[in-house]
Image (tube, one colour):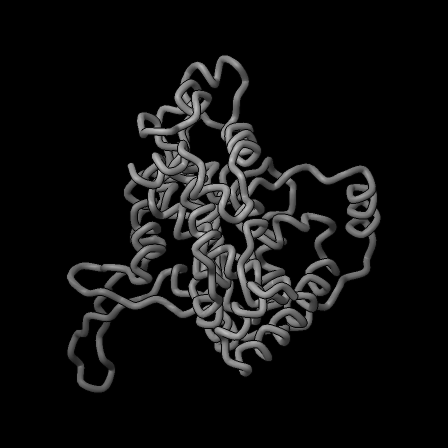
Length: 357
């Protein structure tokens, strides 16, 4: 272990370091349980767990049939969490997901009472299937629950379960009759995760497994209380100024019009990422460090999470679209042109302008 790593590790108590070792073992066990049902999708599983343990939410995008629902429901069983699936449709109203007040006669007193019937949001893990198919009012009700971890019905606020984790899906190939999430609302999601087609060998294994009669039993690995403890532990993971500067450099370079911004950013982007991107990069980096059994965050953690954190927070312009430039290509070029060696950022005149802006 390097001197920097040793100093970072010493910042945490011995009990915390033991908790990290137990968490690493639990993470390996969760992946093992998931792979009893899910074939491949290593990166997706890792990003979902990082978001969960960092108290974030995920927006998943992928074509139908890639086992998004199965993956999420299986994960809820691995974590022994209450799972709720909401199929979003154009006629879905906010009360359909938050719950509603109703009047019921008390059989003992004979009086009528106003009671609250909780909606499907009152669970630990929520799958918001095809969120872009429902109107903005219902989307806004879900986003309030994500941000405030409560729902408002009338004048009464109802607290949601803890832990609370929302995974919303979007279908990228059907846009007719949909209500795409505005960029400001997408910013509420910690990650935007792409669920891609499986490889040939993975699809071969999927075909073999799913066309037989054998079913796999899932053994719970963690419960709600243990997940909350891990979420607290994530906040304790130390991060050096150099790693924070690296995260800031990536995010601040996306802001068009700021001093020191690369030319390709000005050519390809019309809008950049806000401060929430920096927060999510660092929190995600802390959770990823724990997943790999480390007590400190490195620039490699930030690099690994740059794509899911930034791809829905930067807005490409018409020029980029005409040249086939996607947000992921912009992020790739950004990573290539941003030095990660300690001292390289703070000594570079261009980055001094970016940090001072």
